[in-house]
Image (cartoon, rainbow, N blue to C red; front, side, top):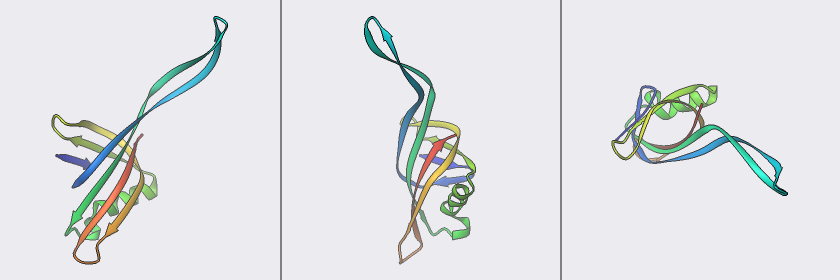
Length: 118
């Protein structure tokens, strides 16, 4: 199970993908009836990942790195290799959202990110 963003290998607890078509829609009158027409230009995907880091210094944290990319509006490269379960070749994405949670005891950091295809 491998999830990589740029040079960071993530320890992913769970993830999901959402696909939305980029399309235009219009109405036309055909055979004495109102019809809806669609033209799909392509598909844009979003991913939600929930991750954990244990005993990682903040300066080396993937969460810190992704927060900075989100803040600067910079794209990152996202790759997934889950064998037969799920494959995603290197894809450029934006970090739309990141939330970070830390336990008060120990050096454990949980973070959730939402990625959107460029």
